[in-house]
Each structure stands twice: as structure tokens, then as C-alpha cells.
Image (cartoon, rainbow, N blue to C red):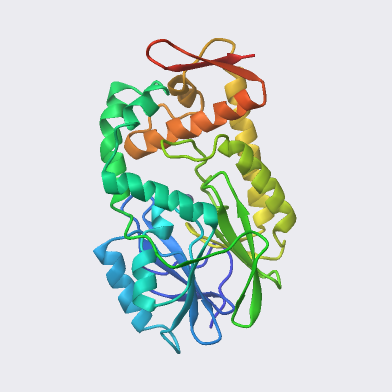
Length: 342
Ligand SMILES: [Zn+2]
């Protein structure tokens, strides 16, 4: 296998495999959004390939998987599947792929619980709480109109959940290809997002935890189980600085692989501090989440991006409430939340 390096490396086409690192293949699956791809990695195992993440559910992605599995180098056997977290581009095809490959599937306990919770809402098509959730964020009538279609669009990316899972957690080790891979997790982007790093320190598969050029989503949404995801996220990134090996090639779930993940972690920590500073600077008067989203530069976002902007703003302002810097009051009877410096 040829080992390519740095941000100049060519990305594989959808369903194509490229050797990215010693014993690791890189492929891409389709996401029907502006972020059009997810990176999937396959680690050479003793008797086959170990898969990290599965892609969103679609007929097209299932076909890509069938072709890819039939054409893998040396063997088509899948020895295991690890799902980094419960977002649909990662877990969407997990149930189908496990069924198709008959391989053990690894996931953290809280991600599996989150996936089951969301699955209940999808099965019931119960979106009744959405208007109340977004109206407390002072979402506009226009925002509200697009909300239900956003959720229906996201729901389509979930296939059946895996039914036979092996629960793993931070600190566990998986032996893949005769090498130890160490697991680590963080909350914030998702409730118990797993990353794995080869014990030799050369490769770190990062999921959505760190990505070049994209700052991972950290928000409070309708089904969030975390009361203060930004606190968990900042603590997780700080912990990650001690865990990450400075020589590791970072293999993220979106965009291209890169080196010196510790620098990217520091940039993201700084990004959130800058956002918090902007919010503090605008809270001499009472503000709604909608107004604060504009303070963070998200006034023009629409549709799905608008939802995420409101949810991310809500997470940042909630963090400041929990540190005691900001107070919150709810208007009666609308329930719209207003914030000001304490
Ligand atoms: Zn994610």
C-alpha cells in the first residue's frame, strides 16, 4: 500500500478505497447535504477488515457497500464494526451492515441509548414538542416552517439500529490486526463519542471529534440528553490534548486526514472562547437566543443550518448561565428565554 501524506492527498471517490496509512483503507459514502461525504476507514485485521462508521442509510450507499465489500483487497471478511457516535451519517447503516456482514458491532452505552431514544421519536413520527422547543429560542415564523421538514430529512438517514451490540468505553483496548487500539471518548458533539488511537501512536481515528476546517457542532437540540454540552466539549478537548499522540496521523470523518491534531484541538478551544467573548460583549441588555445567533454571525443561515445555529447558540449561552456569568428569564406566557449579564 502506498502511504500518502498531508492535505495534498487525493480523496477517494464514493465507494473507492485508498490506502491512507499502514494497514488502513479510506473510503467515502454519500451524505445528501452540503457536507456531501463521510469518511469511512477499514483497518486490516488478522482475518479481514475492521470498519469504523457506516454512512447514512440510502439505497445508493447500500449499493456502494456491496460493491466495496466484494472488491476489498485479499479478503471480503468484516471482523468488526465500530460506530463512533449516534449521528445518522455514522450509525445510519449500522444495523444493515451488521446484518449483511454478520460482524460484531461496538458502540458506547450512551450513544446506543441516544440512538434508541431518537428511534422511538422517529417510529412514532412525534414532532409535537418541536415548536415549543424552538419558540423558547425565539425562532422566527420562517424558521419554524422549515423545522419539521428538517427533522423528516434527517430521519431518512437512519436505517434500522443494530440489535446485537458490544458496549465499549473510554479506556478500553481493541486488538485489531494484532495491534492494540485504545478507545477514548468525549461528550459535547454527541454524548459519548468514541475515538481510537493505535497504541504505537501513529494513527488516530477521530470521527467528528476533530476535523480540519470544520468546527464540530456543539448544540442543545430537542432530544439532547446533555444539559451543558459545551462544558463537556471543552473538558473533553482539554483531556484530548493529553491523550493525542503528537506524531499521530488524524483520520477524521469529514474532509482530509492531517497531522498535529493537538494544534487543531487548540484552535477549536480558542474558537469557542472567542464565541463566548462575543456573547458576553452583547449581554448588557436582555437578548434572545435568536438575537445571540446573529451576534455569532449566523443571521443568514437557513433550514438545517439555521436549526443548528440556534442550537449551538443555546449551548453557548447555557454554558455562561451555568458558570454564573449570565442570568436567564422566561417571558410569560410565550416561554421565550432572555439572557443578560449577571
Ligand atoms: Zn456527528
